[in-house]
Amino acid sequence: MPIADPVPSPKAGERRIPDLSSEKVREDYTQAACEAYLRLADAWRLSSKQACALIGEGSERTWFRIKANDWGGTLSQDALTRVSGMIGIYKGLHLLFSDPLADEWVKRPNSDALFGGEAPADFMIKGGIPAILETRAYVDALRGGL
Image (cartoon, rainbow, N blue to C red):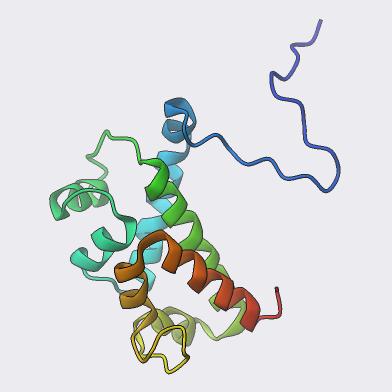
């Protein structure tokens, strides 16, 4: 007899949002999220200080341990949300622009009213999750996704 899936599959058109309040779910996502964020931080040429501030997870020491694959921790719900938002930004930018411009965009001053002349990375560092999600919505709107 086949083992039933404990969580029913979503119906057509439905999305299933993972339960990030669950330690087990966060453990399952942490390694992939860290690997993706490391690549993103490298592509965006973030300083260690910027990378720490954007992910909102610990100190620079923690960041260096994550980079060295010597960190046994689990990302918080907030950190996973941040990483998810930034991956969406990264993907959207690469759909809009050539690779060099897509990767430079977050560090260039932006005259749009949302950023007020700041670089999007600085805007996101100052504003945390709400600013990351606003930036993602902005990029999605630029490419006609909203």
